[in-house]
Length: 135
Image 1: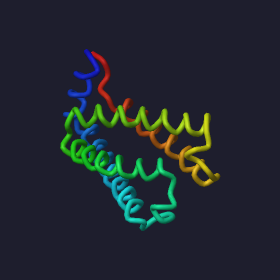
Image 2: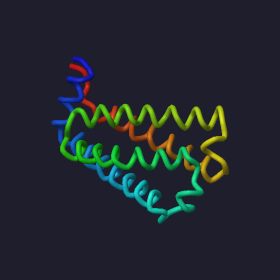
Image 3: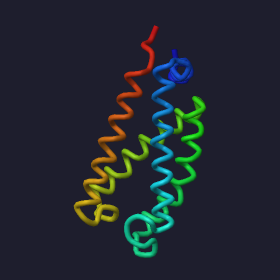
């Protein structure tokens, strides 16, 4: 059984469907946080944020909205997009934390990135545990 078949079979189960709906809610909350960042409602004014943060907010807002819709509707493409995003969001903070100080300019931002890494790893592990076993 391939990964695609396992995921397509898994999204039809109740436990994975509930998990995907919870992920959709997290994606919506993430989209709201990016929208708040763009509008300057949280954190410093938009013009004083690093360029990478402004770009990330602008890219992740529509991405989170589309992912939330797909996950809520139990679409297989949304699951694979979420998995790819999780892997991508694991690699980028690791590179920036270990190799440069471009993203994490103070200890609070470093804690936020470590929290992002731990949260993504936990969600990914939980998803893999919820997948049906190989037959």
